[in-house]
Length: 632
Image (cartoon, rainbow, N blue to C red):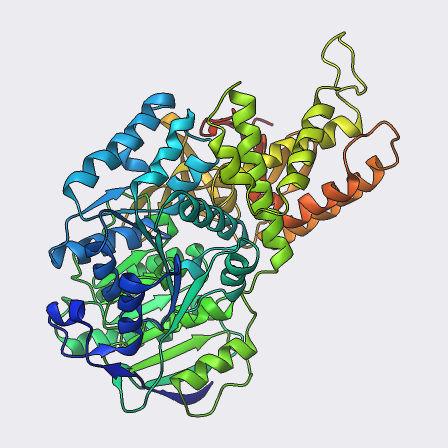
């Protein structure tokens, strides 16, 4: 373990612009004034605001809302969405929330609900808060009818907060959304805000889509307004938090005892995996009840657990994961964190502490690097970007993803209806240089699918031919572009979370890498227990078109992906030897290189040591599971 300090930081200030002065600001941070000026006088449709965590980006959103008839604020997680809703309401803003729970209809009914929802709240609310998944579902024809795109005509301003949060697949959806909003609105105001923005994302908007952008960066100034306090950092090499439970729990116990009151969280423990977070919570319950009593857990397992809420902040310790990297607005003075995988995620996680008071930060798994000496916060941020993996996205990769999304959106509409509003074609074709390439590829795959013999009908391929299997598998992988973030297999589960079994919905393939099924209740609710580390429980998955070739699915996701990529690229090379195959082999290779197969395909069957799980995945419908106990 080594120790060093990261000094506090301040931002340049100025007299406030009138809107900020009217809201009671005695001064403004300089970047806030620049945003106000863009809102009122900027000719650029897009503004990118780069300001560190805790700098006050949200304060500028109020003026955007007040200056436009209807503003849409887009947040990457529902937890952050709900937190920001409360913040706006406390400040007197009348805001409404639009998410999956808001809409309950199907088909045309759901489409009409979406449009009528916006029409209703446009009349008597200041803004609508949503997630980008709903916007993407409209683009990708997941709502029935061409009228769904009218949704984008209802807003004259839009904010994408924490836009660094998205991976390349999700970012390609946001890029398409921004392009459509900019083209449909007469005078759009699109604000992108982040502490750690992805510059390749911004460059793509500027260079590939042709948007003019105003860059607004927060300026550090030692004589300015302090927004970060001193942090004492303890670096633990090659260690995970779960391996140090006793020492951390003991330290938390002493801190809680000394605090005397617990009406607000001041300590956070941030894991890389939900499984370790769950195990730590269970450990506290069994071994340190005095700490457990004042600890709240909020990771991905808790997202859909109706009994879990952080609305009441009467806890002292927050146990969380990457879910807590954005939006935690607590006075965290003690932070235990595992090193995440990218520099952007690291600074988001690290930035949760020291925002209101000096803090201590224990970082686990951070090896030697350019850090280690006492520095100020801006220098430390530079060191992290230098020493950890970059989150930048390669431009050609993004171009392929955006182009495929647009092509697939048109393909789906053409398949479902002989007519749709042809303005949509312009939405998706204009300024998307890979659109034609991927539209032709999709058409070629679909044409070749029609050549697979069905019964005694004509066709080039038998169902068992390697060409037929590859075509079917590829076509199923197209469906990763139906949504923003790829496909998942949600299952109803009960899992150990300390004093009780938590009841939630979570991705099944991820769950089975960490837990064993110990029972199956009515309606296929899976009761989980911890895996026995001494007895390896094999989990295999059978994928569509390759059901006779099970793939081991109890490995880390990166290993499964590597295995699947090796298999599929080899099959493409084999198929290239067929003279009758009329799909570009080069584009087939490229397609599988731009996606993650584990996110693109759902298994048709999963097998554990004791259960067979059949997955019914009908196009356009949520996947369903059927669990049967295996018999010797």
